[in-house]
Image 1 (cartoon, rainbow, N blue to C red):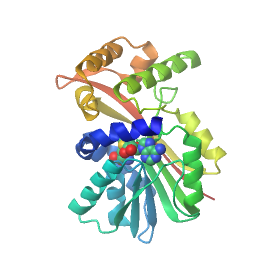
Image 2: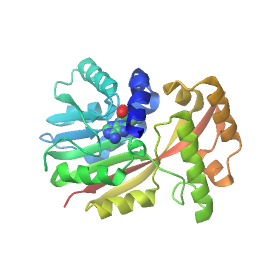
Image 3: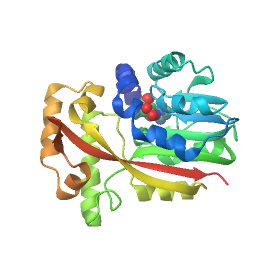
Image 4: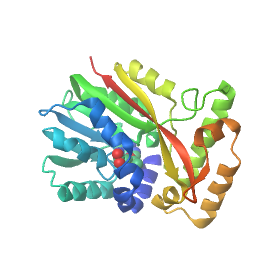
Length: 265
Ligand SMILES: C[S@@+](CC[C@H](N)C(=O)[O-])C[C@H]1O[C@@H](n2cnc3c(N)ncnc32)[C@H](O)[C@@H]1O
């Protein structure tokens, strides 16, 4: 059911993601390339590529990038981006992150940016990423993480649990295809459990302009009002994480991305 929702939500709003500032110009794009240091001869898989921004960031540095996604309209946007940037080595493929249609040990690098919080079975996605990586290959993840001691220090485990549940409900109200944002600790445990060795982790706060965030998913006016009212009355732990504030006269809040690199032994 949630995969149908993903295709409906992203299918209807695909073009918004080709221009979305957070996706097209977010700091984690350049940072990921900088951290990974891709090799010229690498074959890369970008999972849940959306409008193709991460695939396009890596394409100039490698031999080939396969930009994959569940939503056909998103793949159309990714193809447009590749054509506009003259990236002849970027191709697209329909793929569910939890059942990747690629052979074992096919890729030097698997990337996935700002998407796993939509996947119903994140463990299956990590397992599939490991399977398609060559030995020594790199798994490079960027995703929004839930509030915890890394991103909102000074609260109790109970307060983090409440903040994480409210945060997911806030996201889900704006985009019903949102599943659950994992915490940093959950991500680290998951990668280790699936046989990936952590190479690097860091957190990157990103400013989210509330109106643009709603517009990306064509949120109805009544829901925009409800989202505003949630933002105005969050618990101290969630307040510390989201930091809602006016910036240049626009309501703005913060989300934290986990950027993590792990190696398949
Ligand atoms: C926010 S967009 C991704 C942004 C993109 N990676 C970037 O760096 O700009 C989320 C994408 O996840 C895709 N998606 C969600 N669930 C998926 C799944 N199970 N398998 C593959 N793609 C999925 C959606 O179709 C959508 O294109």
